[in-house]
Length: 494
Image 1 (cartoon, rainbow, N blue to C red):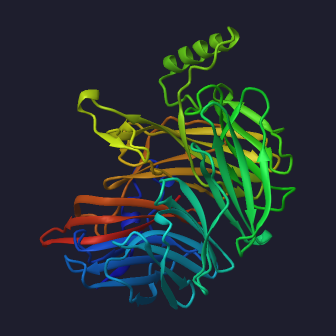
Image 2 (image 1 turned 180 degrees about the horizontal axis):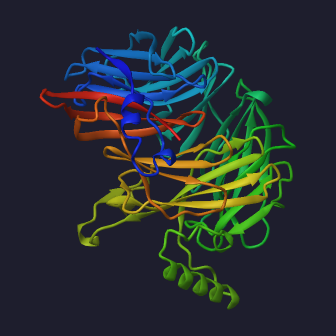
Image 3 (image 1 turned 90 degrees about the vertical axis):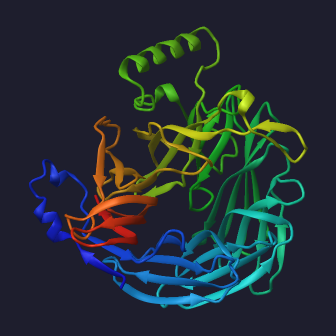
């Protein structure tokens, strides 16, 4: 029987652990009797401090499947549960929450068919409908404004990114004017309900220089405004996140490069209304902690080398690719997080080759390796207040996805965390003050004498207040009892 259990007794029994008061607590845990090979699970945080757990059970041939949706409160007690009757071959892609609903999209074996589900966060009422979106063969991102869907996906004809508007009531779907150039792509998509508009940030490039374009649409997909952001000097705007608010308040915060458009040389913030970058540029050398993932002597040598290059008139030697996170809005400004990464290749003779949409061969990386993650705090005028860093040694993924979760805590501190088997590796940032101490937390089970044999598909998401939700599959051995396989959710409070 699935249930949550209070872990305070176990916590108090461990009160003598050194520095315990400084560690996160795990006040409650939920266990569901799921086997990883039998069920697909997703955990989604609701704005009201509750969680939605979606899981799909099906037969091996996917000719029969049940799609379950269950809401749990902040103490991981069940609030409501329901099911959706959709095609058995449907597979979860993404979600978006805009009170009072959470919207989920599912793909199918037919790449043109997509099913959208709308769940009422409070009551659990479920609406769903299948659409044939012929121009798309994948969905990367989508947002919802007044019940209308704005979808970024891959065009099946040429493989380029496109923006689509979908009216779920009428079923009408139209491609919106957006990306044109060969090397253009979407940088951000923001549904700003307060301003009744959707903002799409587009990076445009001809291979030598790049610029940003922001297109604003109303809920019906009508183009309201088009902003071309022109940069000054030898700085190319690589990408940006856009802030909510009216046109006079909106900011673009992102990264810029110089000669090589693949690599970031720093961060910038600029008002959208200016249409010309009159904002603030901060090179990576100016940041206090960006290079702290290196050992001190290596950082010192790197800084000396880069300063000499700049004095001699040469371009920077930095080669950092940065994957941006969604912007975090704070009472006093914004927090932008990013992960530094690089593709890792084996011996070129053994590397895999693929063909792009023009039948040109290119090498496939063996993985995407991270070096570190950074967070930068800006005020509402785009002035950099602080920067900090979280080392990510040895973390590699096969796809370019976020590996850390970022959350602002009460009092202004920021926590970054990622799962590592049965542990959570985390780092708490207090403005620009950098602490190189490695901090980790072992996930607790119901009983301190239980042993976790293995953990798989582990994840962590920001939840509410100072709490995150850690989850995954575990095989657990209790003393004098048989093994049990569960899907767990642990509340982690910092």
